[in-house]
Length: 62
Image 1: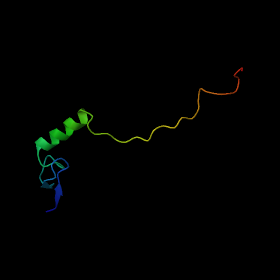
Image 2 (image 1 turned 90 degrees about the vertical axis):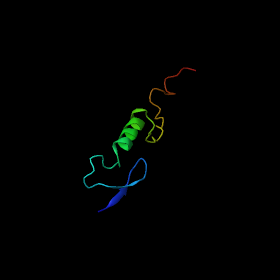
Image 3 (image 1 turned 120 degrees about the vertical axis):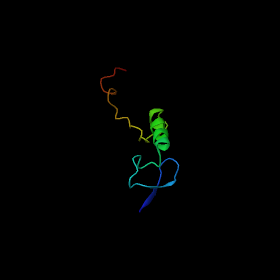
Image 4 (image 1 turned 60 degrees about the vertical axis):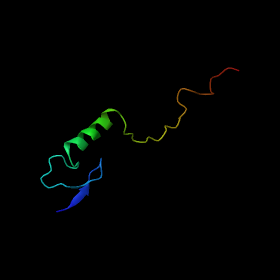
């Protein structure tokens, strides 16, 4: 039997016969779902570089 840590509480948990896998319990599964719904988890995003669209020095009268 292989034990894996629960992603929420880190308790070693068997996946065999566990209806809440990869979590150890319904409580940890619900806590994780709540964190997603509250947007507590964030995926880092690389800032978009400005490509200069919509701006041009050409055609300006000075």
